[in-house]
Image 1 (tube, rainbow, N blue to C red):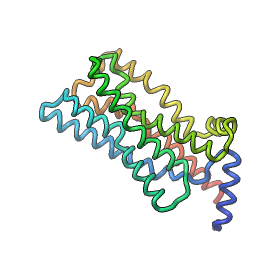
Image 2 (cartoon, helix red, strand yellow):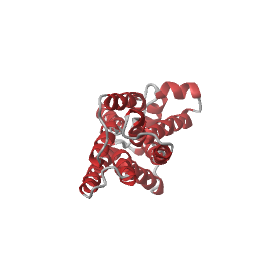
Image 3 (cartoon, rainbow, N blue to C red):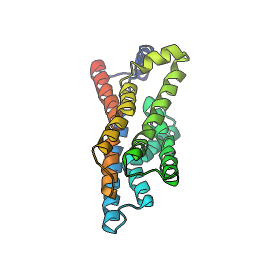
Image 4 (spheres, rainbow, N blue to C red):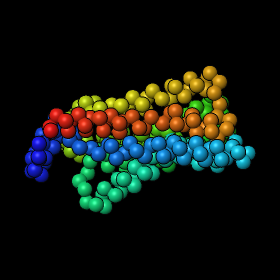
Length: 226
């Protein structure tokens, strides 16, 4: 079915009234994750081969790529959308949130080392968590603000938030992943090499799930209206 611009606008308005989105462009965000994972593993392997298995600077770089590499690209995506004059979307808000959420883990990591926290032991389990998911926390908050801007009602925004599949998956990831990281450390895992640091961060970095859910939701909506 061929939809005119006015038809698509009316359809989007109706979807917004029901708390949904017609086209969030989440498919654009999914492709960035693998490059971040690959970058972290490659850099980690190179550092290990040169004998920098426990280099603090090396771990910072490896964890940044493994946990936040996609955030850089998603931030560029959000900026590109804005420069092209596109209307705001949940995916754009999600991208901005992830970009601005990148800095927190750096402060937490280096601050923990200065305070003498054993970053390789059980007590340091939270460091890969923030590298992997601080941008996800930022994206979740940014998504809530986006919904609030469209509804101008906190109650209605909250209702839409808990009915929005992307926001729900994002929230579940933020709450469940630290338990898995803590369990792994208790069971004896320790990131004593840069590759291990990359793998631990990659395992915690489930940021690809919310965009995947959004993309599948988009396809479902497109098929329904075709």
